[in-house]
Image (cartoon, rainbow, N blue to C red):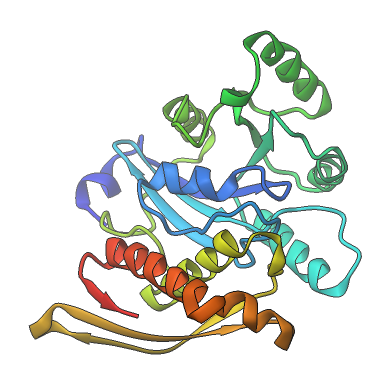
Length: 280
């Protein structure tokens, strides 16, 4: 925490819960805002299962984000727990950032989210994501529709993928946050451990390369995480947990090719994160 920020009466800080339907682009948006990959992405719904914290530092504000699991009307016990985790994060926030998919809306999930949003007496901003996938003439009716559905502070059309209007979105959120000093030092990006992010990056590659064959319930445990400073090398041993023994062959692949591909791409992603060589 710097003295300059602490003494600046105009400085703002606060907690922002990113909420939305599965696959709305919440994790992609958080990674774009932070300029680093801390939250994994895939086409599978419910890829994010934990509350991911990311800190964005701006000249006049510190924005602390929770990337939450997708909110939808869940039926089974596991998904109910995931949605509960998302909504618990929302209740802890100073501001709610709703992210919706402009190109492929999930109307059931959105109705459920708006209904739950009415129970939260908190300001909310809507990020209308994936505008790169729709025609320009479709945008204004979409904005008007969402303005009628809830009393949002503002509606900002964005593309998390290519960065369109991300700064405008940050300015809109900054305007709503309360005055206050920063909660975290300026070099803080997340409260997640390197072990946790490494496990998530491996899980992401499992999802990405096995398509629809492996469910999102897949988990990864980091068994060892050792750093050898003199060799600038991190050695990681990880276990991939699957729901059924029959899924083992899919992840391993013929002659071990799939597992090698998962390991190679995960290693590259972890090396980019740690900025050092990795033996996985």
